[in-house]
Length: 362
Image (cartoon, rainbow, N blue to C red):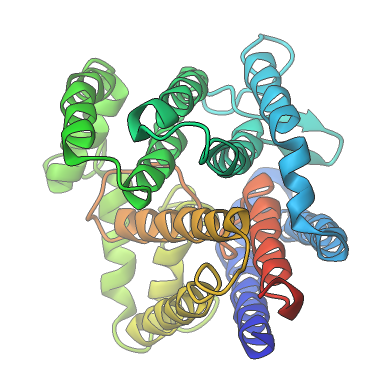
C-alpha cells in the first residue's frame, strides 16, 4: 500500500497545482475590477492551502480510529453551527444565501463540517449497532432521522447541492449493507414529491431547471451561465486558446474561479487539458478505491468508502454542470476550484485516506 499512498499523494499535489494556476488565471481580471488586486483570490487560496496542509499533517500523526470517540460531539457541533449560521447578523450572507461565517481572513462554511461529521457518525453508528440490531431498516432508521434533520438545516441556507449529497451518502451505505429493494424503493417514492416541491415550488430553482433543459431559450437571462460555459469549451478546441488567454473569464462567465473553473480550463487548455484532468481524477479514484478492500477494521472500510463517494460525486456533479448535463448545484471541483472550507476538508479527506492506507492498518 505504500505505492498506493505515494500515487494518491502525487496526484493530489498535481491537481492542487493545476488549481493554483487556473484560479489565478480565472480570477485575476475579476479580482482587479472588483478589488483592485489581481492576486486577491490567489493569495486567499494559498492561505486555505496552508491551513489545509497543517490540518492534514496533524491528521497523519494520529490514529484515525480516534474519530469514533468524537463522532457524536462532531455531530452536535455541526448541528449547532448549522443553526447559528441562519441567525441574521451572525453569518455573512452572500448572494442571498446564509452559508458562511466570517473568521478574520477566512470564510468558514459549516455545511462542509456537517458533511464530514455525518460521514464519521454514520460509520461509527453502523459499526456499533452491527451486533445489536439485526434488522437493516431499524438499524438505519435513526440515521435517516439525523440525515433528514441535517439536510433540512442545509436546505434552509439554501444549499440544495449539499443537502442532496448528504442524502445520497446515507443511501449508498444502505445499498452497501444490503437494505432490501422494498425499503429503498419506498424511500425513493416518498422522496419524489418532496424533491418536486423543493425544485418546482421555488422560483429560482425552477428557473435553473428550465435553463438547464433549454439554456438557449434565454441566453442572456436564466441560461446565461450554461451558455457561457459551453462557449468556453467550444472556443477552446483541441489545444485551447493558451493559458491565461481565455475570454469567458473577462466578466462573461460568473463564478469562473469557483463552480465553473473547469470551463475556463477547457477554454484555455482545450480538450487535451480537460481530458488530462479527467484522467488524473480517474487515477485518483482508481488508487483510492483499493483502500476499502485492504483496511482491516470495518470503521476504516466504511470511512474510506464514504470519502471516495463524496469526492467522486462532487467531481462528477461539478463537471456535469459545466458541460450542461446537470443543472447548476453550487458544488466546487475538488482540489481545483477556489473553495475555502471545501478545499480544506478535501485535503482532510485525502489525509485520512493516506492514514488508513498505512501498512499497519492493512
